[in-house]
Amino acid sequence: MTVGKTHSGKTTFAKELESVLQQAVVIDQDNHAEFINSHYKKLRPIEGPNTLKFSVTNAIVKYAIEESNFHIILSNSNLSKSGRTNVLRHFQDKGFESIIVYFDLPTDLLKERVIKTQRSKAIFRSASSFLEVLERQENSTLIQPSKDEANYLFDIKDSSSTMEIIQQIKVISEFR
Image 1 (cartoon, rainbow, N blue to C red):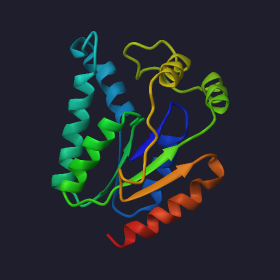
Image 2: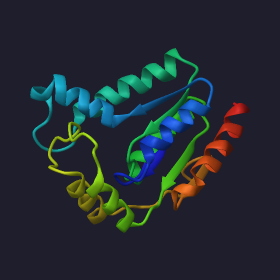
Image 3: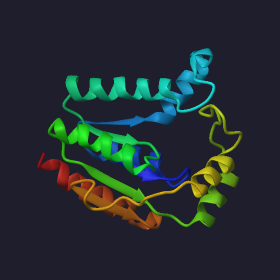
């Protein structure tokens, strides 16, 4: 599971990890949001949580758990401790080992990335820009992941440690 603010490198990391692991799949809610916005915009909730997006994600996760033997890489912001706890508890109940990769990058770097981004805004329901998303995330109460939430916890404070952490996760996964 990735944890981090917008433009911290979660999706890039998840894709790199998927390419290194055998039998792995990335499940990324941004893909689900873009799909819903492209095909089912009328069904999106106008206010409150995007329950449709969560339902799509949950259906895909359930399928991956029950119908595959893949390592599952959840690439979302996962900033809410209660949300992370519920998701990880579900996986642990299904016999999975859990790993959190926390992207703890400086806000100035994230703002720089957001300003330069060429990323599609097709995932938005209520935000008008990634800067707005980042500002919302900055103003929310983030409880950093702790070692008691998962079997393994990795911190990325700069992108130079990414490949080392991917290799460590590969080693862990080979014993599962």
